[in-house]
Length: 84
View (cartoon, rainbow, N blue to C red):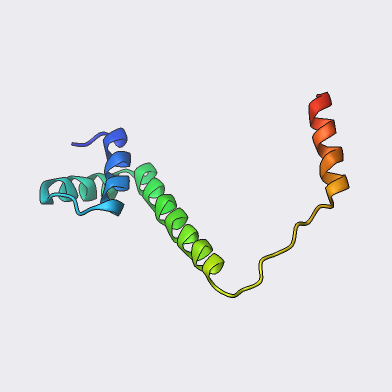
């Protein structure tokens, strides 16, 4: 049986290419039994989809939000961080 470390690598690999049949079956069996790895896969899929939506929004004509902080506020925060 695959280890959780191997599964995390295979989950990432499976998003870039098709895995061989034996690896796909081993991955599915492990994911059926391990809720942590199942959650990891769900998170990776969510992040991939979120990035696809984000990059698609950059390509569209949707106006982008303006900066929330003024340059003066940014400078005050930077100075405060340097002091600590």
